Image 1 (cartoon, helix red, strand yellow):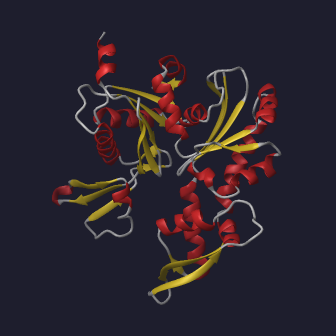
Image 2: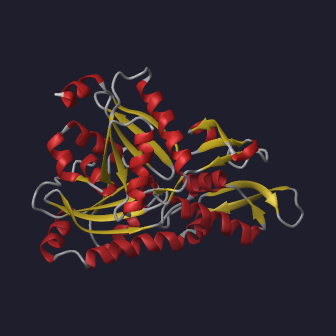
Image 3: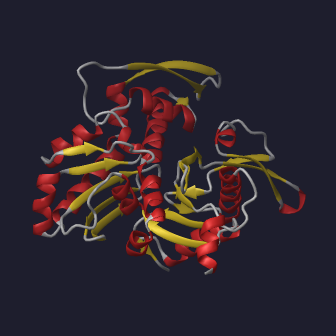
Length: 344
């Protein structure tokens, strides 16, 4: 009876707690928040920290803060690295999503990487509970992404999804509402950004920040050669002279710089296909592979996977928001939620 009335008066939420972005889905409203997973804190005397900004406002401070202010990413490679900052970030986003004081604490479903440890599960659960959750359910990211992509996950057929996020890449084969085979690697968009930063540092003796590297990846980065070579001017600090400098980089060298993380993802897909049961593998030949996650938006990434596997590869309709949308669908269908949620 309490759960029935609590459901009427609370605003239930689905959260995709990502390395790069955190998305919140409110039941009955859809996605209300899509902001960077960044928190800005000020160091106070006695080791205490004061929260200054969260989300987009905090991301703008990355690499631009004075000594006593830190812009930090509390989620690294898909798991919580800074418990306090994550709890504060969730609390801020939940309050923003409600827009008012909720009468009853919400039920929350959170997307987590496949293969998350018990300690990591507990950290996610406790951070949500400290951010005023009444009830916390965990769902594996590829499962939520598959629901969001409209895949028939409850049917006795093989469905392969490749979810490329900021910190992790999840490859999963799903059948009958469960993950038959999965492979999770701690490689994603952040590793691509780091590879670009290292390349520019080595080749041009130019130091650039994370945000600049991400812009290079978005504007001219690709995973498979194009007919035309794109170029871009990059500004940074000259490591030799110590003064600001501008250089021009092209899409071919950026693709070469990102080759290691991209090849790691391709290898994870190849290994997953090799280890998929033969009956399900035959379904994947017919249905193809669904590509989702922010990292899948890298230009020609689907073309590269198609060339490497020989299978049809499709980009999900909403690659960035699909995971939280899938978790939101599970939130609205209790029987589906009970089937796909994982418990500690």
